[in-house]
Length: 462
Image (cartoon, rainbow, N blue to C red; front, side, top):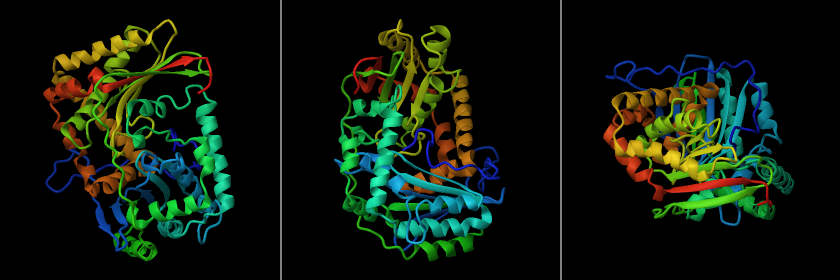
């Protein structure tokens, strides 16, 4: 997994990063909302395929998302989903170790992969005439990854070192993105160490790896997304030719990810021998995806936390001077509010001076939240939140040559069997009223629904 795409990032070789300029849908007035024209179908082996043409630049983005993330990895194999992200670059039937990366780079492209809560993804952005190259390469490793004892041992070492560098030997390592879910959630699938216990990583066998690949890296557990400048009939023909013959798998039943309702506030504290200042985080359980309250929480996030005009930034930074910055959000550091499929937290975090206590921060935050709970926000505040959210959405869609758009199309196909949901995002937020914001704040930003985590500098290791 990556919090900022730390590894497998290649340089951009002459590719422009293009911001998508959406066209209005039939019967839809210009400027009223995002519209991505798309084609969605499934191959006989169950592979979902999303095609979205965009002729604004001679480039294409290709991505394969597998419906396996660290949330549902096997017990006693924590970190296995992330381990496999590395193994996918160690060679396949027709490509040797790391040759996939060389192939894309030598074609003038960029690529990456990441492991998230509910998926593992791989993408390439290439000149348009290299579409077939990308499709062939992705199909080659889906058809038959080269899983050897040597590759497994090598990548177990790589991932173990990554854990040590990014978590164990770094100040505030894992705080709060890795730590907070473990304290806030009850269900093991939502609460285990996603990065992986070093003992679990070391215990993984070759049979484990082969079984994992056969089960989860099958076409009926994946979606292929292609966006950009391509010919639709030709793309369909290539996809059928390269992916159509790959054998599907019998998928295991999805685990129950349900979290029991939280009845009282949780508090936890941890020592960090490398930290120099205390840190504070609080997380609230989110409403279910696609509900009116879910969209209301997206706007509450903008009002309370996002940007220097947000209420919590104004109060904690500008007014009280407790900290220099405030971070957080929905699915913080691991994606956005659209690309997950299970329980999630809305959270806030900061590093503060030792003279400031966690109770002082909580009291100040509670005062701000109480304003929204006790009285509906004015229309001007709601309109501003909508503008901020729309700006963030479009920034995300255009990132890395349109990979943000690919991400939403893939997730909506994987989780909802409906990539067209991308075209209803803005309208769903426009339906949110001040009264709905108030009701949502009362229910989901209640103290009984939150977990508070503090970091104390110094002390023993974890």
